[in-house]
Amino acid sequence: MRHTKVKDLLNSTTTLQEINAKGWVRTFRNNQFIALNDGSTINNIQCVVDFENTPDETLKRITTGAAVSVTGSLVESKGAGQKYEIQVNKLEILGDSDAEKFPMQPKKHSLEFLRENAHLRVRTNAFGAIMRVRSVLSFAVHSYFQQKGFVYVNTPIITGADAEGAGEMFQVTSLPLDNLPKTEEGNIDYKKDFFGKHTNLTVSGQLEGETFAMALGQIYTFGPTFRAENSNTSRHLAEFWMIEPEVAFNDLNDNMDLAEDFIKYVVKYAVDNCGDDLKFLEGRLIEEEKSKPQADRSEMPLLEKLGFVMNNDFKRVSYTEAVDILRDSTPNKKKKFQYIINEWGADLQSEHERYLVEKHFKCPVILFDYPANIKAFYMRLNEDGKTVRAMDILFPGIGEIVGGSQREERFDVLVEKMKALGIDEEELWWYLDTRRFGSAVHSGFGLGFERLVLFVTGMTNIRDVIPFPRTPQNAEF
Image 1 (cartoon, rainbow, N blue to C red):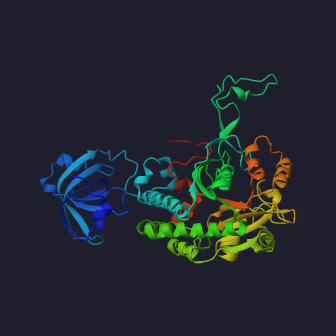
Image 2: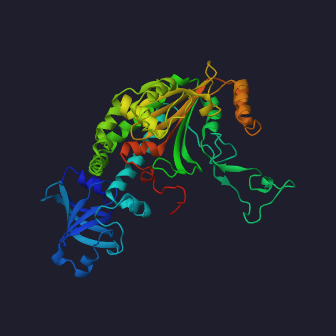
Image 3: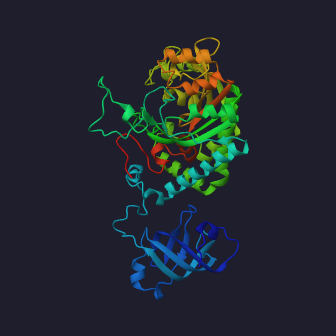
C-alpha cells in the first residue's frame, strides 16, 4: 500500500478505513501512543498501538528516532489538540534507533549542540520548520522573477574575476601544494594549473549577469557564492546563496522599486504558505527572549513583524542624511557605538544600520548615494564626483539585507575608476566590452538568501538557517 503523508492525513475532511503512514517516532508514551512525524508538517500524528496484541520485542523497538510504518484506520481523535489519529492494526519497524545514543531526545537542546549535530538537527521541530520555510522562500524567489519575465541565468562558480575587488576569495587549483611549479622569477606558474590561470570560487555572479542583461533585458541568478572572510559572527558564512537580478534600462529608483516589491512578495508568499511553521517559530522566539532584558527583545512578534514589512513602504534616505542622524544620535554622543561617527565618508557598520532601522525610523530603510571610495568600482558615479548610485536595504535584527546599484555604463568613467583601484583592464576585457558595444543604463542588486531566511524565521544566527554551515575553522559534514 502506498503511504499517505502526515500533512494530508491531518488535513483530511473525513475518516478513512485503511491507510498507511511512514515516518520517525518523536515520542512513545504508555506503550500505546506514538507521535509520528514524516517531515511534511511540523505537526505529529498520534498513532494508537494495540499494545496487548503487540509483541514486547516490537514495543521495545519503538524508540525516539526509529523509522516505522503503521497501517490502520484514520479515526476522530479522543484526545484534545488534534482532529484525527491513527488506530494501528499493523506496525513495522523500518529502522531502529538506539534510544541511549540518539542525540535528538525530546527535550530542549542548545543551538550550539544542534550545530554540532547538523546532520540530525533537522529532525527537531525548529529545524524542520526552518528548512521548510527556506524551501518555500526559494520557490517564491523563482516564482516572482519568472512571473515578471526574467530569464534565470547560471553564472560560473569558478571564475578569474573578483567582482567585489576585495580579494577575499577561495583559490581553486589542481597544482600539487607540496611541489608548486615556479616561473623563472620564482612565482607560482599558473600556466601549469588546470585552467592555465589563477582562478577562484565566485563571490558574486553580478559581472557575468550584467553581460546577459545587456542581451536578454532582465535576468536573475540564484546560486552559491563564497567569501574567504575571516568573520566569525552570527551574520557571516563562508558559503552562502545569493539572488542577483540585473535589469537593462533600470536606473537607481527603478532598482529600489524592484528590490522592495521583490522582498514584499517573497515574505508574503512565506506567510501565506508556511502558517504552521511560522506560528511555531514565533512561539519559539517569544520563549527564547524571555531570558533577555526588555530592551533586547523584539518590539513585535514574528508574524506581526513580517506583516509590518509587507504592508509598509520602505523609508528612502540618502547616506548624507543618515550620517547626520547618526552623528547627532544619543549612542554616538555618549560613545555607546563601537565605531563612532565623526565625519561624512565613514563606512557604516551593523550597529549603525540597526540603529537607523530599529530605533530611529522603526521600519525597513533604503540608504542610497554612498561615498564612492567605500563602494565597488562598477557603481555609477554621481554628478557631484564623490558619491555613487548605490543602495542598501536595511532590516530590523539583520542590518544590510540587500546591496545594489545603478551600474557605471560610461566606458571612459569605468576605465578611470578601475585604474584608480588598480584593477587590471585585461582581466576584465569582456566586462568592458559591454560598455563598448551598445552600452545602456542598467541596475541590479544582490540579496543574501540566508539573511532573508534569518529575517523570516526570526532566528538570530545565520548558521541556523542553512543545512550545513561553512564558517572559519568549520567544514564539518
